Amino acid sequence: MTRLPHIAAALAATVTLSLAVSPAEAAGPPAPAPGTHLMIDTASAPSLTTVQTWQAKSPYAAIGVYIPVAKATDDRYDKVQANLTPSWVSAVRAGGWQVLPIYVGRQAPDKCTSRSFHYVSLNATKAAAQGRAAASDAAASASALGLSAGAPIAYDMEAYTAGCGTRALRSFYGAWTEQLHALGRMSAIYGSRNSTITDVASLPAHGFTAPDAVWVATASGQAQTASLPPLADGTWSGKRLNQFNLGVTRSYGGIKLNIDESAVDDYVWDTTAPSVAVSDLRAGTTRRRALVSWTGSDPGGSGVARYQVRTRHAGFGHRLGGWGEPTTVRATSRRIGLNGGAQWCVQVRGIDHAGNISRWSHQTCTSRFLDQRALHASKGWHTSRMRKAYGHTVAFAHSRRRELTTGPVFARAVGVLLRGTGTVEVRIGHRSLGTVSGAGEHWVQLPRQRHGVLHLRTTSRHKVGIDGVAALT
Image (cartoon, rainbow, N blue to C red; front, side, top):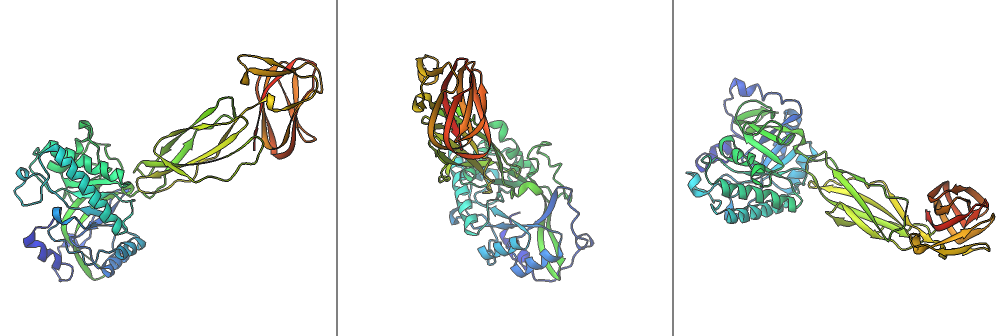
């Protein structure tokens, strides 16, 4: 993939010179297998005019570009990128092509290759530090070009002696991916089957973080990704690239380019927002704290990186306030504190490693019961202490038309904690909302939000106890 110095000029010249094209090349690339599309990569980014012509005339849907590399570790031999600018990237993407950033930094340790490179250290600890540094440099370079996190950054590791420096290279590859993830980016690694990809395929089994995508140089002529030894069947599903042709000349719209061709799984590019499911909270609780939890999934494949949580709350019977500023977390649960009578609502959304943001989840709410001692009691009620009761007290009545009332409330649901066998009517203002009876927690749902004084009125002569009341607005 990397062009050596003595052939760099000749390859660069293929953009403008009229070259003889073989019948196979003239016929164009093979059709990609279902679920994949075609990508080109060239030593230097073509002019925007060339790309736009090819976008209109060719079967390709993506282009790989070599992004700037720190001078101390730059191993791109023909790295002239006069055309590669943020505006070029923006225009190419606007024309319908995805853009894959390629980073060519340090190569395999000195003893593993006969060519002259900036080398990865044979010391695993140092190699990991070099991998992290490369990832940081690559992420900054991609961001400066406006290359979105919807594409992985591919590390180009040229062929080396199989089995050489494996421990150090695994450390390097794992650290490259871990650092890109920490920076909110996806990772890919490119290389030959016998060396780079063999070592990459072994990363999970040895406890190292695997890249999100794997790009295999096969030169097989087959535009498919299903069978790419040494990758085991089913691994990196939907996240494979196969460089099936190297150094072919194609012509579209009268413009020739010398290119490498790859088949790319459609899901290599993560442009799909994740989804988040939040567990429903109980409408009412007697506890001082409640736990809300959520799960995230990312069909685009880059994985959920973090979540944003927003809340709103109100005191007993008050309207809920507006949503507060979201807080960003990596956790998948949160504990909330509740004062007596308070209500609290939450929504969560997810952000994946590609920067896609989900919609806010459905709103889930809970309220803490207000102890009955906070209510105004008519005659006929007496308070009994009970160790297992909410607030350790219960208000009891033995006859009809005994009331506990609150001040004006807004409510769309009212909860009552009862003891005994009697029946209680729930009213807001002059409107009866229904009755509840029997020991336990009972809720009355309203067809719409109501406003007025809340009345809890006994309707039987059976003994009934009221332990607390809650309102959701």
